[in-house]
Amino acid sequence: QVQLVESGGGLVQAGGSLRLSCAASRSIFTINYMAWYRQAPGKQRELVAIVTSGGSTNYADSVKGRFTISRDNAENTVYLQMNSLKSEDTAVYYCNANVGVFSHNYWGQGTQVTVSS
Image (cartoon, rainbow, N blue to C red):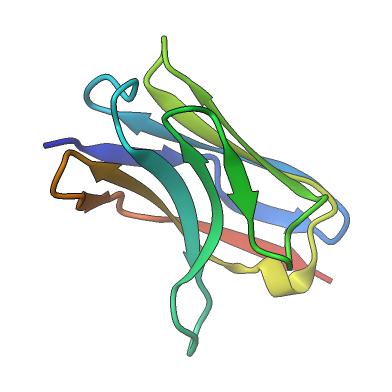
């Protein structure tokens, strides 16, 4: 099992930046992948960015070139650097960890990001 705690959300003006953090309760070195999802009011949860155990990354088209996902194995933490924020980035952001051979998914409690235009 792994517990995930997100932090770093808040209110920011359009064009600004935020960095989200996701601290895991155990080593992330062997976790299959870690990801950030978001869910805006009235919308389905969507994948924002993913980083594999090998360090490969992938992004939703809507955030490519603006967001960067990274992992610090020593700190058991995954980050999401968000630049050039837009009002449509407003959502609750969730950290996700996919663990083990049976691909169990674990979720954090979410952190609110609000971008004012």
